[in-house]
Length: 495
Image (cartoon, rainbow, N blue to C red; front, side):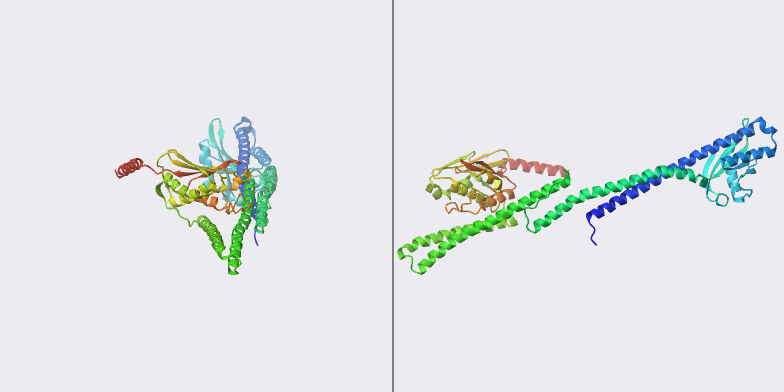
């Protein structure tokens, strides 16, 4: 049988409460009982002092032994005690027991009497709780004090009283103490029940929501109930659901884009090839249509290459090989590849490099792919006669590469998703602006793989600027200083 979190939490909390209350009650009752017995023995000691005063008083000499014994019997009966009188010879010469005329020898053990005698002879008191089962049928309180007559100790008087005789008093205290304790425990049980429900209910809501998401209901959301960790969990869950819904939408958009990008050229190629086979296309037009077929195959090959690159990057099978190279030189080489397209659109290209050489530490091939993709986007989205601007700057540790176009920019609502895979801001499927939204996703992942950052500065209607960072490579002088420092530190460690 599966136990829910609620049942387990409730069981654990209740067990903790029971153990805590049991320990607390046991300790408290033990302290209370000891204090109660101590107070009772103090009263017994006061009564013994009264007897000592009788013995020491002058009036006692005028009383017969029977009258004195009768008075002691009345006193013992009133105080519910049994009295011993111990002589200077360490002998019990009188026992006053109002409840029984039978004396048991075990209570008069020589060891007990000697201990009482030796202690009281030093002027000290004895207060103890012990067991004398045959006489008292349980624990007994004993108090012994010396008999002092005009500063001389002439013996000792001992009072015994059964502890069970105080059951009524202790029971009263128990009721006064444990009744509130039981009420507190029941109230704690109630609070634990409510708290367990309070904790488990949001978890159950999130579990139900996860089940809804697994069944494809991506619109299901959890209502945060509190502003605590569980509330934050609900908010995070909702963010995850939003991301899943976004990714699902992007996937559907991607499938539609790829389907369009593949189906349209394939349909054209099929029509052209079929026309040539059917002799519907004149012989002198065949080269023109074959060139169209070739261009379409190149476009599809580029699309498939992008898909493969994206799959490699996301699977971690796109390793980077770091090396030193001049980012300025690489940028110039990448621009040359777009020379024909730049001329066709009559773009004004402005390249502003802050230094003659800017040596960076990165994967040259991957960064070449980044620059190529960004420049390709800039050329593609710049209008005829527009401007393509590339510039670099740096600080002590980083190099910043900026690539800007003069196109229409990116709609504000598309900015948060521009680096998402499968996302395509231009949804018109224009043949003049081909693409499936994969290029920027690959760029983002390559830069992230380098541990660097890429950002977008967008001005709708006037163009967009992409900026990415690279780590500067240390100069030869910096390398020499670092090498000498490490060597000196190693020598110091060896010493």
